[in-house]
Image (cartoon, rainbow, N blue to C red; front, side, top):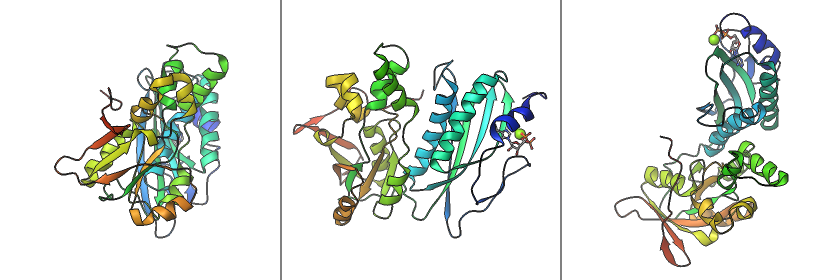
Length: 316
Ligand code: ADP
Ligand code: MG
């Protein structure tokens, strides 16, 4: 940000954040100095949220901050990685203190909740945009290409809430205050499945977080692993909020709606009993089968083959 203000912003809103013991030197120098846990593999990922495209202009700053960090943490969960550090590149139209206070509060509260340290960033002037880069470490990384024919397909928890909440969040649909709050929570405070990821990682062969929709994201595992999947729609855990907001369409939203940030993962048949013993809350939704040509997700509803009207978020 041109001269005046940049260092004040960093000092007042970001520099005080507590850091873990893996941070030898945090915010304030040219680079952070970081000490990864001995013998670990690092997992890193970056995401940008642009105002007017990924969230409505004028959205409460704390909500934007929470969501931007949570979606990145979800990518770590999807790799079976535990959080270590993140950086923040912030482009701001102006040094609006009220906005910055809300943003830094939402961001650092989320960071504390999940034990991730803010170790650096960049602050510039321009149209509002937020880039968060996260790094974590994994003992056994969960890649998309590790699944095999015969593996069981699981999802970590209820689906469809965020997609059902979207029209409410965008104020295209009016509901009572309680439902409005539940919708905003589902959309802006998704829970990255970090703990579940740690518990299933030793058993799982592949994982992905559900950002674009279950069928679309499971399709990524299928293509990367060269297998097809059969999914029974009856077995999908449908979020209560999705049922409340979308009624009959809730099940379709659970299959195709994005933004829930639950995990979809695969487990070899031989490990299924051990997985079930974890009582993780994960639900089996299908099985991987021979791709016989083109990897695809074969969906069934009451014994009939079923295809969605839409199958996932289109970015462009
Ligand atoms: P440089 O000119 O070396 O890039 P900057 O002036 O951009 O340094 O940043 C000074 C210090 O503040 C650096 O340690 C940088 O990582 C940190 N920093 C800048 N912006 C942010 C931000 N939005 N959040 C966290 N740390 C930041
Ligand atoms: Mg800089």
